Structures are given as structure tokens and as C-alpha cells.
Length: 152
Image (cartoon, rainbow, N blue to C red; front, side, top):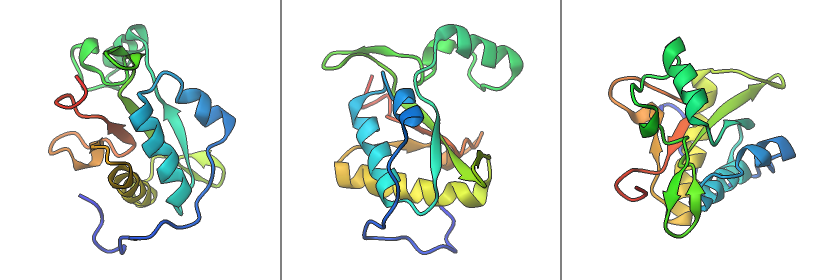
């Protein structure tokens, strides 16, 4: 759920353009999600970085072993690419982290504007997304993914 204190914006605001490092981290991510991330950047008042896009099985296994991923099966990770009939091998998730004083920081007050921008961009692009901040159990504010049901 998004913080109710901050008003939702219906019209896009002047945001920013993703830099080359962020664009590089979107390589291999499903094009629908890439469009949403770019749209969110264009309308978001909070700068963010694409912290992670596609993730290898080996990296996911490492994160599971360290306790940094709640998954038990690395093949269920939406960051790990799977075969898409239209787009080939693609990942279905991104982690977007707020930039605060020029550095990525996991700060909930700054995550909410990104979530609002992602949801607005998804609606504008007619793409369904899931936000980790809406999950009932483990909250993952930086995480956005395309749902399994629509993007197997």
C-alpha cells in the first residue's frame, strides 16, 4: 500500500532520464517493464537508480545462501531470465533504489514516490506490475515485477 499522506499525482511531472548505467542494467529485461521504468523516471520527483535487472542463477543462489533473498528456489526469481515466446530470454523484475545525496539508499519515505510513479507509468502503458511494497509478508520496496499469471 502506498503512503496515504502524500497526494497521488495524476499528470506526469518533470522527472529525469535514466543514465547509461541504469539503461545497461535494463538490458535483457522484458520490454514492457523497461517502458514502465522509463515512464516512471520521466514523471518521478524522486531520482532513482536501476539497482538490478537481470540476475543469474548463480547470483540468486548466492543471495539465497546469504539470506538476502527470501526465495528457496532460484528458478522462481523473476530477475532470472526465462523464455518469452515473443521476446526471447528475458527477466521480469527490476529493483529501483532511491538516490539520496547522490547515493543509492533503501529509505521507505523516498521509495513511495517511486512506487507511485511506477504504478502511474504502468497504467499509462497498459502494463500490469506487482510492487514488492504491496506484498503481505516480506515487504520489498525497491522490487517491481511482471506477474507470473500474465508473463509466465
